[in-house]
Image (cartoon, rainbow, N blue to C red; front, side):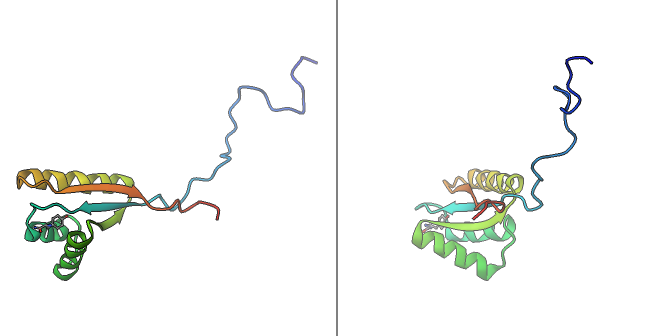
Length: 114
Ligand code: TYC
């Protein structure tokens, strides 16, 4: 017999099984809008309607929340979609010569053991 032991898997041969199952629930990210003193309220409301697909009344509520408390959640998305929303927000803000800021932060890991 060679030095390869019969009862051990061969070294260097990848196992086909995954030791960690990929989550069916992706990590989700909050897109945050930040208050500033220059961006018109109507612009923020329109952005919340067009980019984040809120109705007029919800868009007004979110804008006022950001205006009054400094920051607020525009929506919750997967990483790629959240990045796109942040980029679209900054692009529209720049076109409007507005300093409006958006950012994103992860929600809690859906697979975290509690
Ligand atoms: N504070 C701005 C104003 O008084 C309105 C505003 C709301 C700006 C939300 C940014 O994310 C924002 N015109």
